[in-house]
Length: 88
Image (cartoon, rainbow, N blue to C red; front, side, top):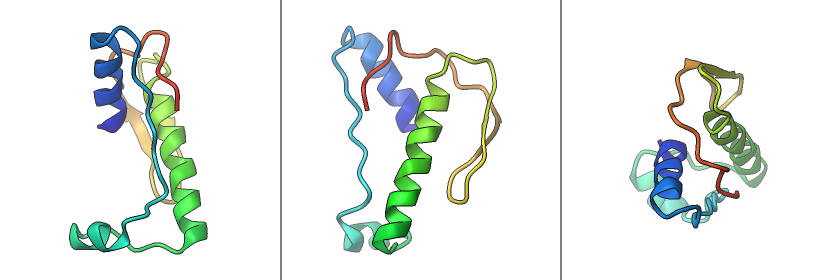
């Protein structure tokens, strides 16, 4: 959802959006929302996978697949891609 929301904002603001994902610095807040508390190495691996998913969602392809240990897509229809694409 963050990829689609960012793509929509990018179109609405005429390409003035940048996505700034993080590896998780607020572990208590993440745990309070039933999110996992990760070790630093796992947090970086998860962030890397999340960026791969976002880029796939912005690819403009009709259907995308990305394998991953934490996040994966299997035939998702991403919708309109941002144009030309926000930075990460």
